[in-house]
Image 1 (cartoon, protein in one colour):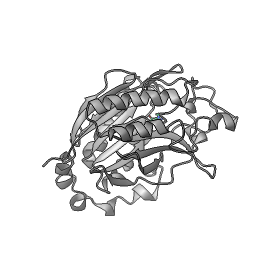
Image 2: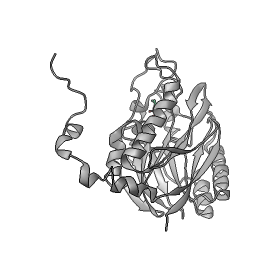
Image 3: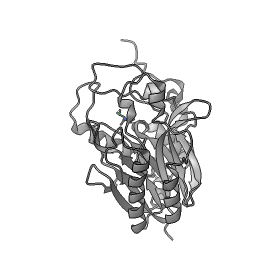
Image 4: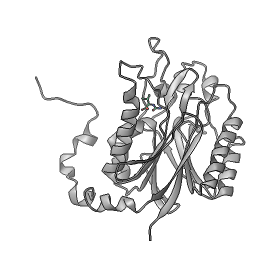
Length: 309
Ligand code: CDV
């Protein structure tokens, strides 16, 4: 018997700075309705899905920043999303900016099961960008200013018939993200992202943005023998082009489904979770082949230390 489950990648097109959450939630519910028609059991939405990607602006007024954060989940504005998903019997991944009761701010994702219960929370560990205004850039990337580094590690959850884990955007570029979840037997990694189509830190041909996206998703899937569902906020948002390219990657590392637009779009795929077994039992049988006595530097140091000249 296979463990087949249909999963939807629910890409969102641009969200304007002035677009109210209630309208974004309506767009998300429209995608959930399509997911229901396609018999999806789980839907993945992007990183910071409820608002525009606000770290692109330098703001000094904390109240202005906090307007992009959620103080409770679900809230009056997001409850309709939870209700629609539960009505359809669909679980979902949702990225949002979290402001905790004790005043901490995280770039967060939650995993909600098919009955509308929050079963998992993840807080982004790898925060890209910078903490101060950098006027030479055409736009800012101030995640290091607006968020704390996540404090929950990379947990996985056994829910909806699979072992699932989460990460967020820049996390996908770090093999440690996938490996820590791989070491917990992850079968399905869910991730949302917001990736500008241009590198503002230095010159890089623009096509590399999508190449690197695919490269790390496919490597993470293959090297840990896991499904990966990666979902973008896409299109030109407040003057910044975002790559899109939301896709579903199977444990062989092959992309098996991909969006074709940079707008609101759902792609669905019948994922056989047991496809994760072959790699886990053979070439990436960790217990059999990993040589941790040689991996100490991975957790003992951050920067590289080349040998002396
Ligand atoms: N939201 C992100 O984490 N974006 C980064 C960009 C800035 C490179 C990413 O890794 O896609």
